[in-house]
Image (cartoon, rainbow, N blue to C red):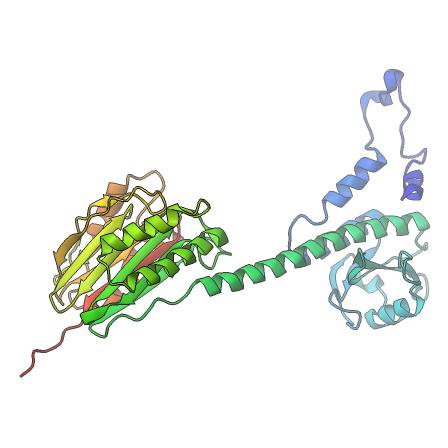
Length: 414
């Protein structure tokens, strides 16, 4: 690169300086290092490999006055150019360039720059997209007239290394994102099956483009005597960290629920377990124990929003529940509330992402939900579709988890 600096410092490109070292006439000329930094900064502006290659060929074409393209970035056996900048007619045949480059490639440890005589007055330059032993394809550039100088080859090599470094980061980022995605899918365990005497529907919408699962979750647990435990929870935060804590809360819940404790005592034990782990994130949780035989639902809340009930006429209302502290605080103090539930009604549990809107009071948000109306014959699947559509949950600012349940009507025995 030192040679290129010297070539750039030609008398034609450096203005004379006046007194005090300032350029004559008050107009400055960028230093060679500044130009080089600017050129490098225009390559690798994103973690998208296609964008990086396009930025590389565009910058090389502008710097050395040539057509530039990337030759099959994912292998040497390709025969097509990609990310072409400049006149593609000037470039040598892609298959010929790949073959000639392999035949003339230097030994390991050299820069790998190959000057290709493509015939006539079209000299070409082949530079590997490589960094720290990792190769991602080759850069080919060609022009009419004069061959490429050593200084130009060094400049192109530097820009190619810059692009290769960004491509490496992009591929590593994609690999890590894939691992995170697989882990998130593993954490998003399916809820258990409720008793056949209960119809249940569940929806989960993570916020953002990349997240597959966050801290919101729904769960159903079969209990004795035909009862089912319905649970919805919301761990603080988003992404993988919240998902890991969510999985821990779900695992603890399933273990505690096996003892068939009332909902408020289940919350108390969940709180005790979480408070003993200093790294565990706090969470809100709402538990509903549905007893179809007696037509009762028993509720308990740990910092969670109240559930809604939709009656036989399609009118929605909120059930009163005493709200205790969130899980993980160690404060306890959870109280049960029992309500009647018949087959004409549907019970709906949800996380705050369904109703909350930025800058809006939560009471107004809940009122908007309670003002919704439904068809009298709507089943639990249609109820969730209607709620998500009317509250525009697809564009919510937080994760959304919602569950609807209805007692399955069974005719009386003859």
